[in-house]
Length: 111
Image (cartoon, rainbow, N blue to C red; front, side):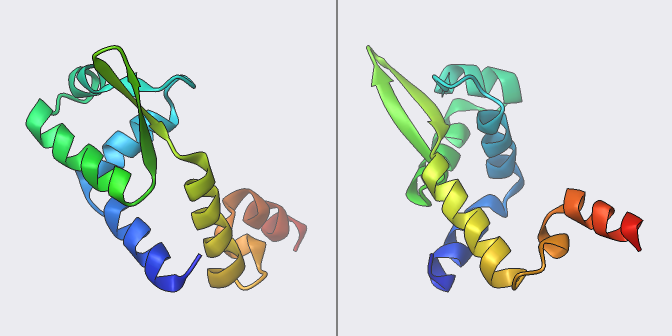
């Protein structure tokens, strides 16, 4: 992943409502959630939700699947894995304790 792409993806998550939507979708069933369910669950008006879903989709973090008249949204796993790989390989520069808290605890406990 290029630096500019990573910055764009991170920028899409740097907004409270979008981060809230993304977190809800990470915890959603594999089939995803329809927009109406997301709206109800997070108490976000549908027009506002639509805008944020579009932004997350444009960043490649989520994808929509049409089923009948409904759109179901879910996480785009490959994009999220690319971002996490970029962050751990590039930003942490081979030091997993900087990027992964579980590793940091193990490293810190050992010393």
